[in-house]
Length: 554
Image (cartoon, rainbow, N blue to C red):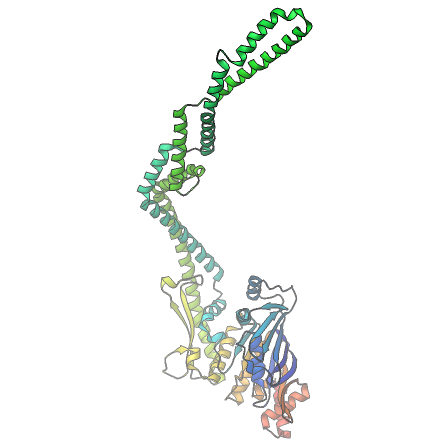
């Protein structure tokens, strides 16, 4: 509920802090005292359009802060704030502040966290429901009529929504499978050609790297083969270094015993022969290792180029070709096995659709039955509110299938006819301001406050009526307030007397400065204000006595 409203520099209000409680609170005052300013100020924190004309003359800015207390925070508000990343601690009041600049533009905060005005508008319906002379929100808006009737009827909206979601998901799966099979059929010839081409070369994972390595090794051997051939000819010829060393070793061996140094020379020459022979062996091994078959090199290059060409064709890497083949086979298998899968999915979608239709039909029956009961309940409230010639109708209509949704297959709208024989029409298009407010009051009483905003405000619902009708309005407002919170801007002493709290809005002038103030009245103040409302400018003893009788009769 709205617990506190703080206003700074809004039109005629310089500074104002108002505390509100539960039950029925009434706001009274002479015409032009500034009651509309309070509603305009409250509208700012509810996301109404920023009008720089609301800034008090001579000031740079205006601000309005509203504090709402909940236990706990309603789910509808919590979900919106959570999506927006606005944090509200459990048990903490919801503090909304709006600042308006004199040169245009505005800013908004929720619990000191900056937010967009659109967010205020989104949560406003769960905060305050305002009904006035030019009401275009709340119960007048047919978008909320179905939900109100459902709460009145006790419709299984959660089960209906769940059945709708299941049906849509089943239909989506079926549509996706159909599209997949149809696409596969359209591509079947191309898939077969591509798969045949890939199968003919049967690419293997890691094959590109192996071929590239083999090709590089063969190309290297080809490059070195000429050098190795020259070395082999040099090494194996009759004048090779090894042959010369062997001849020298045989000759030295015959004379090595003639001198110790010759023996040492022979030993060194033998070691050279060993190293040289080892070098010859290594050269022979290298020649064998680097030997290549030109045909094998051509084959490796042809295979590598072929793999790379087909990979380019399919716009992928060579190592991805085996996966491409598996995907193509799967697509072709889907064509063969797709019909069986489609049959199963069609059966599931049909079953889910039937389940939804059963729940939608049950909801329709509950709505039609509840609509008759609601029409009867509203009709009982109309005569005391001086609307005895009017008729109320809850129209439940069947929607075309393309407009079915999570709320079922029905449209719901509250209609009225204010004159005998007149056709029914939407609430906002046929009733005058006063009639509309009384219709809404009758509807809300009949609905027994089925959900809605935490705070309900009626602005001059009693305009143009008095006596018994005003008493009936006051009695219903008090009953409707119950343990909740309802605020009524009124000119009727009968309505004012029903208030649990009473606020007096007054305008005063000092020189060229005019100010609006609001005061919470005590019992004596209430008596005097109600007496003023009864008698006019001059409060008479008779008016005070009548005010006492009104207050005592509550």
